[in-house]
Length: 122
Image 1 (cartoon, helix red, strand yellow):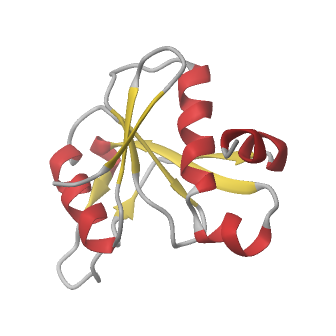
Image 2 (image 1 turned 90 degrees about the vertical axis):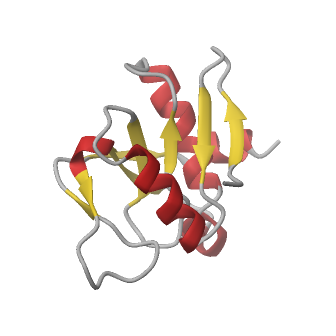
């Protein structure tokens, strides 16, 4: 499976889907697991999985910023981006859902600031 890979400043690996089909493959791989997953509240972003279990708040923020920077929300609005944070145990695919769409429960929402996204892209 071809995914985008990023490494946080602390060395944690972040995996990002490239498109809807790729997002589905990535989510199937981590469904039911404890890994932290991030996706924008608005549709049109990669699912971003932190490979490391129990990442710290800095790693989660960094992954959220990368996720936001690759989203359609950022591309279209160039403002703050809301992301949902959850684990692989909180997702499932219901029969009939379109490609790239997953049901998520128990997510937390975090706002990624415009300034942080701009820094991430440099």
